Image 1 (tube, one colour):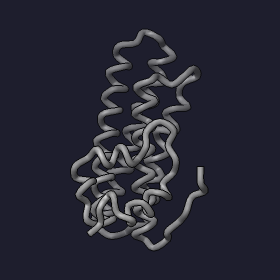
Image 2 (image 1 turned 180 degrees about the vertical axis):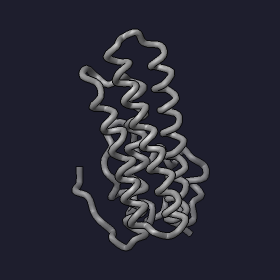
Image 3 (image 1 turned 60 degrees about the horizontal axis):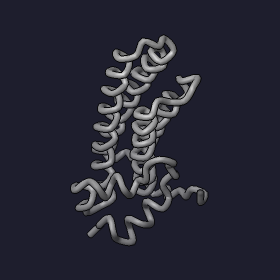
Length: 164
């Protein structure tokens, strides 16, 4: 059985990209479905679902924040971020289809594209990234990094990342 507290969990997730604000273990262990995952594939499906719901929530927060601000610079940043999150959701949906079909290399390709979107969103702000958006971007980056590690594991590539 593949459990989050098992050696398999540790070896899979020890390779995930380091994220400054949120820790992937906290996100996954706080989810009941993820805690009960019985295989890397199931954990990948759950992480993909969490990525999608996180992207949707952050996009909604972006749209709401855009309506509330009068600052033209912030409005433009939010508008660009909304487009980034539309793209992220598009890539996540494609990656999920490839996950269902067993094409783990394509899962990685499209998840990496989704991972680039919150990074691009962050660069839309000349000044500091708004706090709520910073957290949403970090969470999506974290979840996408977990999916990347799992897709590499399932494809047999078992890539490793340098220690942070």
